[in-house]
Length: 214
Image 1 (tube, rainbow, N blue to C red):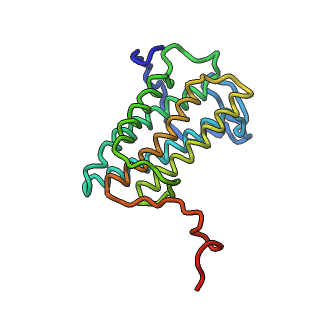
Image 2: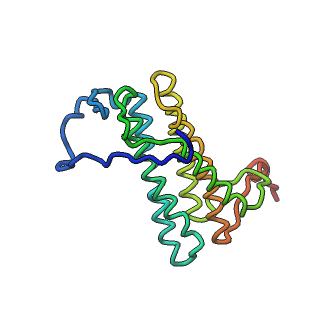
Image 3: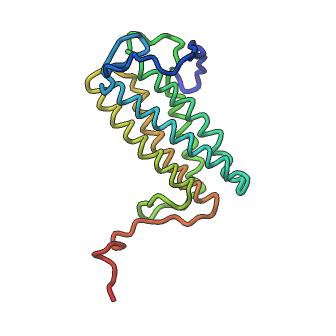
């Protein structure tokens, strides 16, 4: 599949009439193909982390929306994070399905999503000053939220790598999570830049043993 190739996925086919089913009370859950697996299995851990990441991305998007009234420069993050949330659901669908059960038009991640993240990172990085040290999270609420997304995304990536050691998964899944964690880092820096908030750089001597005592 080329980077410029368009894909049309099937819409969801489900009806959620009742949230609880009592079918998971024995510590098992179902994959998209109907297979029953343990809730703490590596595949469940992987797409569970992706689901967690989606929640934190939604929190970051809500913060960006709230800030738009005070500083319109952060607005580009709103549609980008919205798209990321949809893509994470596509990724979860892919991870929740065994390779032999994936349908041709099933929602999934492709190299087009990876390439788009790279383009956005390049565009935003061009506005930022080069780093002289590592950055500490927390130069504003949106910055901190995006750093949380970054670290949760790294965990999802590690779990996907662990899953790939024991089961087959599409390689695009790991590539996407790798680029997305980098994108959250760039977006966190850009969010601070957009509101003129000073970044806190890591100083190894700013610690109890390194601070000057009077």
